[in-house]
Image 1 (cartoon, rainbow, N blue to C red):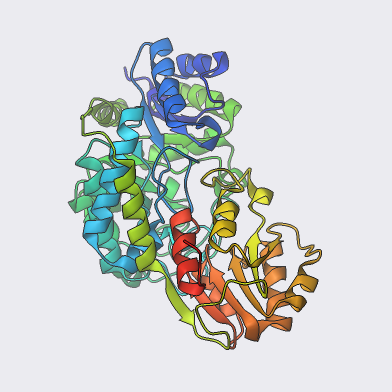
Image 2 (cartoon, one colour):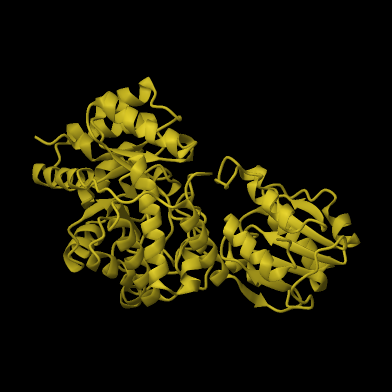
Length: 488
Protein backbone atom coordinates (compact mmCIF):
# COMPACT_ATOMS: atom_id res chain seq x y z
CA UNK A 1 0.00 0.00 0.00
CA UNK A 2 1.21 3.50 -0.84
CA UNK A 3 1.32 5.87 2.12
CA UNK A 4 -0.60 9.06 1.14
CA UNK A 5 1.82 11.01 3.31
CA UNK A 6 4.41 10.60 0.54
CA UNK A 7 2.44 13.06 -1.61
CA UNK A 8 2.97 16.05 0.67
CA UNK A 9 5.30 19.00 0.09
CA UNK A 10 5.85 20.92 3.31
CA UNK A 11 7.36 24.30 4.01
CA UNK A 12 10.07 24.09 6.68
CA UNK A 13 11.46 26.51 9.25
CA UNK A 14 14.98 27.65 10.07
CA UNK A 15 18.38 27.60 8.39
CA UNK A 16 19.13 24.08 9.69
CA UNK A 17 16.87 21.03 9.96
CA UNK A 18 15.44 21.10 13.45
CA UNK A 19 14.46 18.07 15.50
CA UNK A 20 10.83 19.12 14.96
CA UNK A 21 11.28 19.19 11.18
CA UNK A 22 12.93 15.79 11.11
CA UNK A 23 10.18 14.41 13.32
CA UNK A 24 7.47 15.89 11.08
CA UNK A 25 8.89 14.23 7.97
CA UNK A 26 9.36 10.91 9.76
CA UNK A 27 5.81 10.96 11.11
CA UNK A 28 4.09 12.01 7.90
CA UNK A 29 6.37 10.37 5.32
CA UNK A 30 6.35 13.59 3.29
CA UNK A 31 8.58 13.58 0.23
CA UNK A 32 8.55 17.21 -0.89
CA UNK A 33 10.31 20.16 0.77
CA UNK A 34 9.47 23.77 -0.09
CA UNK A 35 12.42 26.06 0.64
CA UNK A 36 11.43 29.65 1.41
CA UNK A 37 13.41 32.77 2.28
CA UNK A 38 13.21 31.74 5.95
CA UNK A 39 15.39 28.72 5.07
CA UNK A 40 17.94 30.39 2.79
CA UNK A 41 20.94 32.38 3.96
CA UNK A 42 23.66 31.44 1.46
CA UNK A 43 23.96 28.84 -1.31
CA UNK A 44 26.45 26.83 0.79
CA UNK A 45 24.09 26.86 3.77
CA UNK A 46 21.21 25.79 1.52
CA UNK A 47 23.19 22.87 0.17
CA UNK A 48 24.09 21.87 3.73
CA UNK A 49 20.40 21.98 4.71
CA UNK A 50 19.45 19.67 1.84
CA UNK A 51 22.23 17.19 2.62
CA UNK A 52 21.58 17.12 6.35
CA UNK A 53 17.82 16.61 6.09
CA UNK A 54 18.21 13.79 3.58
CA UNK A 55 20.96 12.20 5.68
CA UNK A 56 18.93 12.34 8.89
CA UNK A 57 15.86 10.88 7.19
CA UNK A 58 17.85 8.31 5.24
CA UNK A 59 16.00 8.97 1.99
CA UNK A 60 16.08 11.40 -0.95
CA UNK A 61 13.56 14.25 -1.08
CA UNK A 62 12.08 16.51 -3.73
CA UNK A 63 13.42 19.96 -2.81
CA UNK A 64 11.66 22.84 -4.56
CA UNK A 65 11.98 26.63 -4.50
CA UNK A 66 10.09 29.58 -6.02
CA UNK A 67 12.88 31.03 -8.15
CA UNK A 68 10.95 32.96 -10.78
CA UNK A 69 13.20 35.99 -10.95
CA UNK A 70 11.81 39.49 -10.58
CA UNK A 71 9.20 39.80 -7.88
CA UNK A 72 9.64 36.25 -6.47
CA UNK A 73 13.17 35.62 -5.22
CA UNK A 74 14.35 33.64 -2.18
CA UNK A 75 18.13 34.18 -2.38
CA UNK A 76 19.54 37.54 -1.35
CA UNK A 77 23.01 36.67 -2.68
CA UNK A 78 25.00 33.93 -4.36
CA UNK A 79 22.77 33.24 -7.36
CA UNK A 80 21.76 35.44 -10.29
CA UNK A 81 18.79 37.71 -9.57
CA UNK A 82 17.06 37.94 -12.94
CA UNK A 83 14.63 40.77 -13.77
CA UNK A 84 11.68 38.39 -14.18
CA UNK A 85 9.02 37.38 -16.68
CA UNK A 86 7.73 40.84 -17.57
CA UNK A 87 11.25 41.86 -18.60
CA UNK A 88 11.61 38.70 -20.70
CA UNK A 89 8.26 39.50 -22.28
CA UNK A 90 9.54 42.93 -23.27
CA UNK A 91 12.70 41.36 -24.72
CA UNK A 92 10.53 38.94 -26.79
CA UNK A 93 13.41 36.49 -27.33
CA UNK A 94 12.96 32.76 -26.55
CA UNK A 95 16.74 32.36 -26.64
CA UNK A 96 17.03 34.69 -23.67
CA UNK A 97 14.27 32.79 -21.85
CA UNK A 98 16.12 29.52 -22.46
CA UNK A 99 19.36 31.08 -21.23
CA UNK A 100 17.69 32.23 -18.01
CA UNK A 101 16.35 28.73 -17.36
CA UNK A 102 19.77 27.25 -18.08
CA UNK A 103 21.56 29.63 -15.71
CA UNK A 104 19.00 29.01 -12.98
CA UNK A 105 19.41 25.25 -13.33
CA UNK A 106 23.19 25.48 -13.20
CA UNK A 107 22.93 27.48 -9.98
CA UNK A 108 20.13 25.49 -8.27
CA UNK A 109 21.07 21.91 -9.15
CA UNK A 110 24.40 21.91 -7.23
CA UNK A 111 22.45 22.93 -4.12
CA UNK A 112 20.32 19.80 -4.30
CA UNK A 113 17.24 21.69 -5.49
CA UNK A 114 15.43 19.47 -7.97
CA UNK A 115 12.44 21.63 -8.88
CA UNK A 116 11.95 25.32 -9.67
CA UNK A 117 8.33 26.40 -9.18
CA UNK A 118 8.43 28.40 -12.39
CA UNK A 119 7.62 29.63 -15.00
CA UNK A 120 4.47 31.65 -14.35
CA UNK A 121 2.31 31.21 -17.47
CA UNK A 122 -0.61 33.43 -16.47
CA UNK A 123 -1.47 35.83 -19.30
CA UNK A 124 -1.77 39.45 -18.17
CA UNK A 125 -4.79 41.61 -18.96
CA UNK A 126 -5.47 45.34 -18.82
CA UNK A 127 -7.04 44.85 -15.39
CA UNK A 128 -4.79 45.19 -12.35
CA UNK A 129 -4.03 41.78 -10.84
CA UNK A 130 -2.41 42.12 -7.38
CA UNK A 131 -1.22 38.51 -7.29
CA UNK A 132 0.48 38.32 -10.71
CA UNK A 133 1.41 41.67 -12.29
CA UNK A 134 5.00 41.64 -13.55
CA UNK A 135 5.27 37.92 -12.78
CA UNK A 136 3.57 37.42 -16.16
CA UNK A 137 5.33 37.39 -19.53
CA UNK A 138 2.63 39.83 -20.68
CA UNK A 139 -0.68 39.96 -22.51
CA UNK A 140 0.41 38.16 -25.70
CA UNK A 141 -0.62 34.54 -25.14
CA UNK A 142 1.39 33.20 -28.07
CA UNK A 143 4.53 34.98 -26.88
CA UNK A 144 3.97 33.74 -23.32
CA UNK A 145 3.67 30.21 -24.70
CA UNK A 146 6.96 30.48 -26.63
CA UNK A 147 8.87 32.08 -23.76
CA UNK A 148 7.45 29.68 -21.18
CA UNK A 149 8.36 26.63 -23.27
CA UNK A 150 11.88 27.96 -23.84
CA UNK A 151 12.35 28.75 -20.14
CA UNK A 152 11.14 25.23 -19.30
CA UNK A 153 13.58 23.60 -21.69
CA UNK A 154 16.42 25.71 -20.31
CA UNK A 155 15.74 24.42 -16.81
CA UNK A 156 15.07 20.79 -17.67
CA UNK A 157 17.89 20.41 -20.20
CA UNK A 158 20.27 21.27 -17.38
CA UNK A 159 19.01 19.18 -14.51
CA UNK A 160 16.16 21.01 -12.74
CA UNK A 161 12.46 20.26 -13.18
CA UNK A 162 10.19 23.15 -14.14
CA UNK A 163 6.71 23.64 -12.66
CA UNK A 164 4.44 25.77 -14.85
CA UNK A 165 1.79 27.74 -12.96
CA UNK A 166 -1.06 28.60 -12.21
CA UNK A 167 -3.25 26.27 -14.26
CA UNK A 168 -5.59 26.90 -16.02
CA UNK A 169 -4.43 30.53 -15.85
CA UNK A 170 -5.23 33.32 -13.38
CA UNK A 171 -3.97 36.35 -15.27
CA UNK A 172 -7.49 37.83 -15.36
CA UNK A 173 -8.02 37.60 -11.59
CA UNK A 174 -8.65 40.83 -9.69
CA UNK A 175 -7.94 39.44 -6.21
CA UNK A 176 -4.80 37.87 -4.77
CA UNK A 177 -5.34 34.22 -3.79
CA UNK A 178 -2.92 34.72 -0.89
CA UNK A 179 -5.67 36.89 0.61
CA UNK A 180 -8.98 35.56 -0.74
CA UNK A 181 -10.52 33.42 -3.47
CA UNK A 182 -10.63 35.14 -6.90
CA UNK A 183 -13.36 34.40 -9.44
CA UNK A 184 -12.72 34.75 -13.18
CA UNK A 185 -15.98 35.10 -15.11
CA UNK A 186 -14.74 34.76 -18.68
CA UNK A 187 -16.67 32.71 -21.27
CA UNK A 188 -15.17 29.27 -21.81
CA UNK A 189 -14.17 29.79 -25.46
CA UNK A 190 -12.44 33.12 -24.80
CA UNK A 191 -10.62 31.75 -21.77
CA UNK A 192 -9.39 28.64 -23.58
CA UNK A 193 -8.16 30.62 -26.59
CA UNK A 194 -6.03 33.01 -24.53
CA UNK A 195 -5.29 31.82 -21.02
CA UNK A 196 -4.95 28.09 -21.68
CA UNK A 197 -2.59 28.48 -24.65
CA UNK A 198 0.69 28.75 -22.65
CA UNK A 199 -0.20 25.60 -20.70
CA UNK A 200 -0.84 23.68 -23.90
CA UNK A 201 2.64 24.71 -25.01
CA UNK A 202 4.13 23.70 -21.66
CA UNK A 203 2.51 20.28 -21.86
CA UNK A 204 3.83 19.90 -25.40
CA UNK A 205 7.29 20.87 -24.13
CA UNK A 206 6.98 18.02 -21.59
CA UNK A 207 7.20 20.25 -18.54
CA UNK A 208 7.84 18.03 -15.52
CA UNK A 209 5.16 19.61 -13.32
CA UNK A 210 2.14 21.91 -13.51
CA UNK A 211 0.72 23.80 -10.53
CA UNK A 212 -2.98 24.55 -10.26
CA UNK A 213 -4.55 27.76 -8.99
CA UNK A 214 -6.85 28.73 -6.14
CA UNK A 215 -9.29 30.44 -8.50
CA UNK A 216 -12.92 29.78 -9.31
CA UNK A 217 -13.87 29.56 -13.00
CA UNK A 218 -17.70 29.40 -13.29
CA UNK A 219 -17.45 28.59 -17.00
CA UNK A 220 -15.79 25.28 -16.05
CA UNK A 221 -16.92 24.38 -12.53
CA UNK A 222 -18.54 25.80 -9.41
CA UNK A 223 -15.54 24.94 -7.20
CA UNK A 224 -11.97 26.35 -7.37
CA UNK A 225 -9.54 24.70 -9.77
CA UNK A 226 -7.72 23.26 -6.74
CA UNK A 227 -10.72 21.03 -5.99
CA UNK A 228 -12.13 20.56 -9.49
CA UNK A 229 -12.07 17.15 -11.17
CA UNK A 230 -13.38 18.85 -14.31
CA UNK A 231 -10.30 21.10 -14.46
CA UNK A 232 -7.60 18.77 -13.11
CA UNK A 233 -8.68 15.38 -14.44
CA UNK A 234 -10.85 16.20 -17.44
CA UNK A 235 -9.06 19.29 -18.79
CA UNK A 236 -5.42 18.91 -17.75
CA UNK A 237 -5.11 15.12 -17.93
CA UNK A 238 -7.80 14.58 -20.58
CA UNK A 239 -7.97 17.49 -23.04
CA UNK A 240 -4.31 18.51 -22.76
CA UNK A 241 -3.08 14.91 -22.46
CA UNK A 242 -0.70 15.87 -19.67
CA UNK A 243 0.91 12.94 -17.82
CA UNK A 244 3.44 14.78 -15.64
CA UNK A 245 3.28 15.83 -12.00
CA UNK A 246 0.30 17.94 -10.88
CA UNK A 247 1.09 20.14 -7.88
CA UNK A 248 -1.32 22.16 -5.76
CA UNK A 249 -0.54 25.73 -4.84
CA UNK A 250 0.00 26.35 -1.12
CA UNK A 251 -3.10 25.24 0.76
CA UNK A 252 -2.40 27.79 3.51
CA UNK A 253 -3.46 30.71 1.31
CA UNK A 254 -6.44 32.82 2.29
CA UNK A 255 -8.36 31.61 -0.76
CA UNK A 256 -8.48 28.20 0.94
CA UNK A 257 -8.20 28.78 4.68
CA UNK A 258 -11.07 31.30 4.80
CA UNK A 259 -13.38 28.49 3.65
CA UNK A 260 -11.89 25.10 4.55
CA UNK A 261 -9.56 23.67 7.22
CA UNK A 262 -6.18 22.77 5.73
CA UNK A 263 -6.63 19.02 6.34
CA UNK A 264 -10.03 18.97 4.63
CA UNK A 265 -8.62 20.99 1.72
CA UNK A 266 -5.86 18.42 1.14
CA UNK A 267 -8.40 15.62 0.92
CA UNK A 268 -10.48 17.57 -1.62
CA UNK A 269 -7.29 18.41 -3.52
CA UNK A 270 -6.20 14.77 -3.71
CA UNK A 271 -9.66 13.73 -4.84
CA UNK A 272 -9.50 16.26 -7.69
CA UNK A 273 -6.43 14.50 -9.09
CA UNK A 274 -3.30 16.16 -7.67
CA UNK A 275 -0.03 14.31 -7.15
CA UNK A 276 1.62 16.77 -4.74
CA UNK A 277 -0.23 18.53 -1.92
CA UNK A 278 1.57 21.66 -0.75
CA UNK A 279 1.28 23.08 2.78
CA UNK A 280 3.79 25.85 3.34
CA UNK A 281 3.18 27.26 6.82
CA UNK A 282 0.76 25.42 9.14
CA UNK A 283 2.73 22.68 10.93
CA UNK A 284 -0.26 21.35 12.85
CA UNK A 285 -2.24 21.39 9.61
CA UNK A 286 0.50 19.27 8.05
CA UNK A 287 0.16 16.62 10.75
CA UNK A 288 -3.64 16.73 10.65
CA UNK A 289 -3.70 16.42 6.86
CA UNK A 290 -1.44 13.36 6.85
CA UNK A 291 -3.61 11.70 9.52
CA UNK A 292 -6.83 12.48 7.63
CA UNK A 293 -5.56 11.12 4.32
CA UNK A 294 -4.45 7.89 5.97
CA UNK A 295 -7.87 7.47 7.55
CA UNK A 296 -9.77 8.36 4.37
CA UNK A 297 -8.52 5.40 2.37
CA UNK A 298 -7.72 7.09 -0.95
CA UNK A 299 -7.66 5.13 -4.21
CA UNK A 300 -4.52 2.96 -4.25
CA UNK A 301 -3.96 3.24 -8.01
CA UNK A 302 -4.06 7.04 -7.80
CA UNK A 303 -1.68 7.10 -4.84
CA UNK A 304 0.76 4.72 -6.51
CA UNK A 305 0.69 6.72 -9.76
CA UNK A 306 1.35 10.00 -7.94
CA UNK A 307 4.19 8.51 -5.91
CA UNK A 308 5.77 7.06 -9.05
CA UNK A 309 5.76 10.48 -10.71
CA UNK A 310 7.39 12.05 -7.65
CA UNK A 311 10.06 9.37 -7.41
CA UNK A 312 10.83 9.75 -11.11
CA UNK A 313 11.73 13.40 -10.60
CA UNK A 314 13.72 12.72 -7.42
CA UNK A 315 15.82 10.15 -9.29
CA UNK A 316 16.59 12.56 -12.13
CA UNK A 317 20.05 13.78 -11.12
CA UNK A 318 22.00 15.39 -13.94
CA UNK A 319 25.42 16.99 -13.76
CA UNK A 320 26.13 20.18 -15.67
CA UNK A 321 29.03 22.55 -15.84
CA UNK A 322 29.55 24.92 -12.95
CA UNK A 323 27.60 28.18 -13.08
CA UNK A 324 29.40 31.27 -14.31
CA UNK A 325 28.37 34.21 -12.11
CA UNK A 326 29.69 36.78 -14.58
CA UNK A 327 27.70 35.15 -17.38
CA UNK A 328 24.55 35.27 -15.27
CA UNK A 329 25.06 38.91 -14.35
CA UNK A 330 25.65 39.90 -17.97
CA UNK A 331 22.51 38.06 -19.05
CA UNK A 332 20.48 39.76 -16.31
CA UNK A 333 21.70 43.22 -17.35
CA UNK A 334 20.99 42.56 -21.02
CA UNK A 335 17.40 41.56 -20.30
CA UNK A 336 16.88 44.50 -17.95
CA UNK A 337 18.04 46.98 -20.59
CA UNK A 338 15.64 45.54 -23.17
CA UNK A 339 12.77 45.82 -20.70
CA UNK A 340 12.93 49.53 -19.88
CA UNK A 341 10.49 51.74 -21.78
CA UNK A 342 9.50 55.39 -21.56
CA UNK A 343 5.79 54.89 -20.95
CA UNK A 344 4.88 58.59 -21.01
CA UNK A 345 6.80 61.69 -22.06
CA UNK A 346 5.59 64.43 -19.77
CA UNK A 347 6.89 67.90 -19.03
CA UNK A 348 10.20 66.76 -17.54
CA UNK A 349 12.63 65.79 -20.27
CA UNK A 350 14.94 62.81 -20.04
CA UNK A 351 17.65 62.18 -19.05
CA UNK A 352 17.37 64.08 -15.79
CA UNK A 353 20.60 65.79 -14.61
CA UNK A 354 22.23 64.38 -11.49
CA UNK A 355 22.89 67.43 -9.32
CA UNK A 356 21.88 68.97 -6.02
CA UNK A 357 18.66 70.33 -7.56
CA UNK A 358 17.42 66.83 -8.41
CA UNK A 359 15.69 64.83 -5.69
CA UNK A 360 15.78 61.02 -5.96
CA UNK A 361 12.98 59.36 -3.95
CA UNK A 362 13.45 55.67 -3.15
CA UNK A 363 11.00 53.31 -1.43
CA UNK A 364 11.91 52.50 2.15
CA UNK A 365 12.48 48.80 1.44
CA UNK A 366 13.26 48.11 5.10
CA UNK A 367 9.54 48.45 5.84
CA UNK A 368 8.85 45.23 3.91
CA UNK A 369 12.00 43.29 4.79
CA UNK A 370 9.90 40.45 6.24
CA UNK A 371 7.77 40.10 3.12
CA UNK A 372 10.23 40.41 0.23
CA UNK A 373 13.80 39.42 -0.52
CA UNK A 374 16.22 42.04 -1.79
CA UNK A 375 19.71 41.54 -3.17
CA UNK A 376 22.18 42.49 -0.50
CA UNK A 377 19.39 42.85 2.05
CA UNK A 378 16.68 45.54 2.31
CA UNK A 379 19.18 48.39 1.91
CA UNK A 380 20.84 46.79 -1.12
CA UNK A 381 18.69 48.51 -3.78
CA UNK A 382 19.03 51.87 -2.01
CA UNK A 383 22.81 51.55 -1.89
CA UNK A 384 22.91 51.00 -5.65
CA UNK A 385 20.67 54.00 -6.32
CA UNK A 386 22.75 56.24 -4.08
CA UNK A 387 25.94 55.18 -5.86
CA UNK A 388 24.51 55.73 -9.34
CA UNK A 389 23.01 59.13 -8.47
CA UNK A 390 25.61 60.55 -6.09
CA UNK A 391 25.46 64.32 -6.15
CA UNK A 392 21.66 64.39 -6.19
CA UNK A 393 19.49 64.97 -3.13
CA UNK A 394 17.96 61.85 -1.63
CA UNK A 395 14.80 60.91 0.23
CA UNK A 396 12.87 57.80 1.21
CA UNK A 397 9.17 57.29 0.63
CA UNK A 398 7.29 54.92 2.94
CA UNK A 399 5.87 51.69 1.55
CA UNK A 400 3.33 50.50 4.09
CA UNK A 401 2.94 53.61 6.25
CA UNK A 402 1.13 56.59 4.70
CA UNK A 403 3.08 59.07 6.86
CA UNK A 404 5.28 61.05 4.44
CA UNK A 405 7.23 62.98 7.08
CA UNK A 406 9.44 65.65 5.49
CA UNK A 407 9.00 64.36 1.95
CA UNK A 408 6.64 67.18 0.96
CA UNK A 409 9.21 69.81 1.98
CA UNK A 410 11.99 68.01 0.09
CA UNK A 411 9.81 67.84 -3.03
CA UNK A 412 8.99 71.54 -2.76
CA UNK A 413 12.71 72.45 -2.62
CA UNK A 414 13.70 70.31 -5.60
CA UNK A 415 13.83 71.54 -9.17
CA UNK A 416 13.39 67.99 -10.47
CA UNK A 417 12.19 64.73 -8.88
CA UNK A 418 12.83 61.10 -9.82
CA UNK A 419 10.51 58.76 -7.91
CA UNK A 420 11.04 55.00 -7.89
CA UNK A 421 7.50 53.71 -7.38
CA UNK A 422 6.96 50.33 -5.67
CA UNK A 423 3.33 49.49 -6.59
CA UNK A 424 1.13 52.41 -5.52
CA UNK A 425 -2.05 50.40 -6.06
CA UNK A 426 -1.00 47.99 -3.34
CA UNK A 427 0.99 49.97 -0.76
CA UNK A 428 -0.43 52.94 1.11
CA UNK A 429 2.90 54.75 1.47
CA UNK A 430 3.69 54.58 -2.22
CA UNK A 431 0.16 55.73 -3.06
CA UNK A 432 0.54 58.70 -0.71
CA UNK A 433 3.90 59.67 -2.23
CA UNK A 434 2.53 59.45 -5.77
CA UNK A 435 -0.51 61.56 -4.83
CA UNK A 436 1.79 64.19 -3.35
CA UNK A 437 3.88 64.33 -6.51
CA UNK A 438 0.80 64.36 -8.76
CA UNK A 439 -0.72 67.23 -6.79
CA UNK A 440 2.33 69.45 -6.27
CA UNK A 441 5.11 68.42 -8.67
CA UNK A 442 3.76 66.46 -11.65
CA UNK A 443 5.47 68.64 -14.25
CA UNK A 444 8.89 68.29 -12.64
CA UNK A 445 8.70 64.57 -11.84
CA UNK A 446 9.81 61.41 -13.60
CA UNK A 447 8.20 58.38 -11.98
CA UNK A 448 9.96 55.05 -12.51
CA UNK A 449 7.60 52.09 -12.18
CA UNK A 450 9.62 49.26 -10.66
CA UNK A 451 6.95 46.82 -9.44
CA UNK A 452 3.68 47.44 -11.31
CA UNK A 453 3.19 48.68 -14.86
CA UNK A 454 -0.47 49.20 -13.94
CA UNK A 455 0.48 52.24 -11.82
CA UNK A 456 0.77 54.22 -15.05
CA UNK A 457 -2.93 55.04 -14.83
CA UNK A 458 -2.33 56.77 -11.48
CA UNK A 459 0.19 59.20 -12.98
CA UNK A 460 -1.07 62.53 -14.41
CA UNK A 461 -0.62 63.24 -18.11
CA UNK A 462 2.13 65.82 -17.59
CA UNK A 463 4.24 63.46 -15.46
CA UNK A 464 7.06 61.64 -17.23
CA UNK A 465 6.89 57.88 -16.60
CA UNK A 466 9.55 55.21 -17.15
CA UNK A 467 8.55 51.56 -16.78
CA UNK A 468 11.35 49.20 -15.67
CA UNK A 469 9.16 46.09 -15.28
CA UNK A 470 11.20 45.03 -12.26
CA UNK A 471 13.13 46.11 -9.18
CA UNK A 472 16.10 43.77 -9.14
CA UNK A 473 19.44 45.60 -9.16
CA UNK A 474 19.88 45.06 -12.89
CA UNK A 475 16.44 46.58 -13.51
CA UNK A 476 17.12 49.59 -11.28
CA UNK A 477 20.43 50.22 -13.02
CA UNK A 478 18.81 49.99 -16.45
CA UNK A 479 15.92 52.26 -15.45
CA UNK A 480 18.18 54.91 -13.97
CA UNK A 481 20.48 54.87 -16.99
CA UNK A 482 17.42 55.63 -19.14
CA UNK A 483 15.94 58.29 -16.89
CA UNK A 484 19.03 60.02 -15.45
CA UNK A 485 22.61 61.01 -16.25
CA UNK A 486 23.83 58.34 -13.84
CA UNK A 487 27.38 57.98 -12.59
CA UNK A 488 29.55 55.02 -13.72
